[in-house]
Length: 531
Image (cartoon, rainbow, N blue to C red):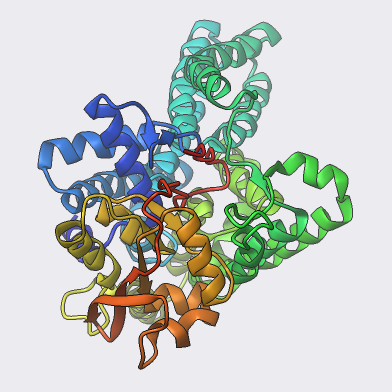
């Protein structure tokens, strides 16, 4: 627990997703509806926003709310993974090692605190919890009433997981199918196994149906999630490769009308159906990405990965491995078919850690005392290196702590600029902290950008070095050079941690043009209506 406390206290800036959760959750609890940037929230389901919103109301500070949320769910995840290790191995030493490893390896607790959005840990706890309940159900598979009760419990956990991350519903489908098949092999009748499935589905529906109906009321279409959208097969391929700049070239290019950006979004299923070969290339990219995450030590050290694979294979005939393996395969499947990030694979990583620790402990027991001692030293060093590398910006005294330049600039704007200011920016942190309407900084020359901003009623441009260099490199020389560009007046310049943020007033703004915000957001966000 102490290690996790140190890490969460080093977290100084909420992630982009967390900022969105805070805004929509706070709005809902304030009585203003489930909205973000003035429009109904359709990208994220409400579990995490409501949780963070409640903590924000209780603690009165956004960062403290995020830290408490991450600590609570981080501890819950560690406890859940320990339970997985115990049910899989029934080995005390393996379970203890798992408790340390899940806090140290880069793709588990450290990843959640440094790069998670706030939803990954709850989803993992709920899905792995459902796997544990499913394994418990098999111990009494001969009693149909027990199977039905366990099915209802699994449904409750998976229903909540859906309201955290909708793709967890797909992971849960595979998990429940495996539990039902194993129950049949344990002597359950077809009716009892069907009862388990029916109980699970009925309780899951309690979570899914109201949210799906609400989404339909807002968007006009039926879907279990609005996340599965993209502009084209090419932009989908860009995000799979991690090429956000190229994707921005399409999504944020100024349209011929001069006031809108990018092409309309389409469902991923329609894009894949129109270009199966293009989708298969995306799958191949995702396979390479997932392989790189695991084989190059990004999420799990190789000295745990290889033993874990060996132990999973050797124990493949056990109920525990089949159920936990099904839980681990779900995130891999969705990552391969959409796109992959290490945090999307948290459930998989946790299962790999538990089985890797079991394999290492079992191997040690068969060796001489001297070999066991050296192995213990090697494990300690390896896990220590993994921990330090993964958590470096969060550790006390780190010379490169998390950068707060953008969020501090947003707070300065909130305190000093007029209430009717409209910001032209590409920074989510500025948008979140400034509490002003935002127009997304488009791709184009500076003259094109300023003309676009004036047409949308923007009054100020915020140029932060971090975002410009990564997303708008063509504007760096103009906006961060030695002279103030024509059409702009410098209002403030702030430098923090070697990174500069400049706040400009846009000259030549027609006061008769009403503001038409175009906030930074997500592929499923509804467009802001014209004034």
